[in-house]
Length: 190
Image 1 (cartoon, helix red, strand yellow):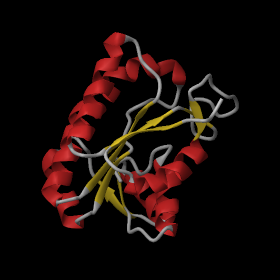
Image 2 (cartoon, helix red, strand yellow; image 1 turned 120 degrees about the vertical axis):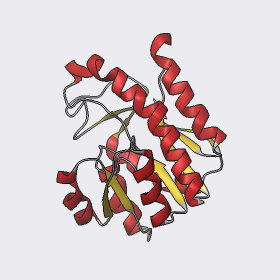
Image 3 (cartoon, helix red, strand yellow; image 1 turned 180 degrees about the vertical axis):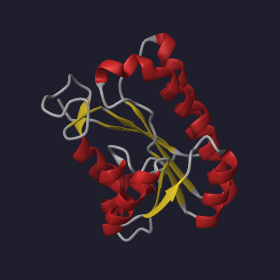
């Protein structure tokens, strides 16, 4: 799982381990490796933009499924606009590198997070390209609503729809490991 130390990743790792999966949890932060081990993952420190190291790691682990839970967003919502180019790169180059590594490793499944709301047209392009790459790899696109709850931009309030509590997003992702290629929307019913 790329992005295992992220907001959804830290919820998914223990759920996947509990379900009997062997999880390699990728983070680019050496400081987060031990916390991933404590959650039950085999921690791997790797940057998705280092395509050579990424491919070596993924092929060495030999996964059946590669999961993309990567974003590059700030902790402070007020700084969000500053991070758009970084997050767009994660969705373009990062996705391309993960798909290539999964293909090289012979992984039979690929699952990647996306968003359930539309962005302004100048910002939507990278999301559309990201989803296209995932679908062309016969993967599953998981469109999450705006996340709320601990560790999110909305820890103490509920954002407008589409939305989903971050813990529920994690729980509803686990069964999608076996979903057929396509787009799945994970939001609360309103």
